[in-house]
Amino acid sequence: MASGDARTLTERLPRRHMLKFLGTVPFASPAPLHAEQLQSLAPIIFHAPRILPEVAVSIDDGWHPHLVEQALDILDAFDLKATLFPTGAVVRQNPDLWRRAHAAGHELGNHTFTHRPLPQLTDREILAEIDHTQAAVRDATGSDTPMRLLRPPSMLGFTTWGGDWRIRQVVAERQLRITLWDSASNAVIMPQREDPKAVLAEVAQRARRGSIVLLHFIRDDIQALPLILMYLRRRFRLVTISQLFENVYEYIVEEALNEGVY
Image (cartoon, rainbow, N blue to C red; front, side, top):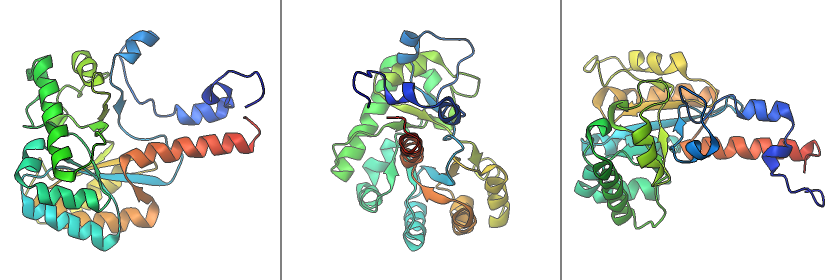
């Protein structure tokens, strides 16, 4: 930083770099908000900025332990890391399975404890769902690092532009990012298709730079997982959701420094 220049790095980035970074706004709202209002709302993530050739695969729920184990075996075989969103209840029921996932380097996110729809819960109940899941994962993995990503069950509360402000305010108390997706398998709503290629086609249709892919620990998705990983790996680097954003930020900073913005 130049002597006496108190501006932050983002304030000093060239306009074209900032436009790249803001190509994906991490939150959405139906009306302009003041800075103090934004600080009280948890950000909503659909995908990372479309800068780097990277994609994150995420897998939800985990009610069927044999499918979780199968998915972990597949990810191990491909030597790839995913972001997993188990409910706190399944972590409590099968701690060894999620300890294995954590030890293998997969990122774990908060998917609430009971998978109840957040709009139907009081503020206190939402916080309890979050906290009980954090505790379940901490006990299973032995890690004191809190999860920073929250995936709301069934996307409820976030199916409209800007989402539910009450829920966003509650989630902000725990400093979590509401983590959605922009590419998904429809197997969870159209199960038993016996066609992994159809699941792959749904994912491939929307997957591009910065995408977050949504799968579930259900039979159709896990059967298609090897095809999905092969398809994505030929086109992108596969990373965790947190790495998506960390890598983009590091890229922008490095490019700015190379151009003499320091």
